[in-house]
Image (cartoon, rainbow, N blue to C red; front, side):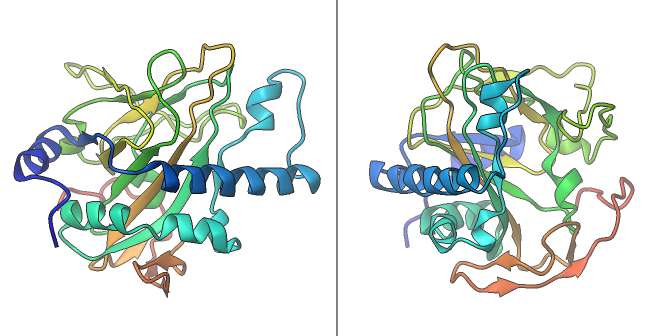
Length: 258
């Protein structure tokens, strides 16, 4: 089976903590994701589980949809994608297990997400995590594209600041001195891969009518001993549930680099 990531690209990922791959998904897969999540969104709206608020109507109307693969077979089929699993396998150098997936609508007026490290919430040990972010819409600085802080994956887990406002994102990490952000631009079908320790976030959507839809799956490897979340519902490439021990608390000291 041909490798989807070249040796040079793997070296870039190892050095920088992220990698952008162009045109890795075709329109059929993107349309499948889009239609599946739009149906999920409509169902949640009809059930009254999405309620518009006057202060940020669009942002609340189109929230991120997390964990829908656990109850929706169509979402699970989007999750179990051979290309995404193969990409994760090459970088993890282990058989990948999906921790979960999230769909971002990122409508106009949506706020940005502060810089954070995904393994703070995932809590995988040993701490090898790869995010596979599929660009469903074009993205860039105007509509809230991804922001990466290269090489921060080599710093291990950094202590976050937790928000005082419960509506805010769950954590934010200061950019360490000497590190700079990189603003990514993607087209539909592009994939962004990033290490679970790489500081990343996104800007606000400043456009009048452009969404920034994206589908992200986080993977750990079979050698993972414990995770902080979804420890009994990891998904292998065949769609079967796999269990691991529960890592019961955030532990900065435990999340050392292996």
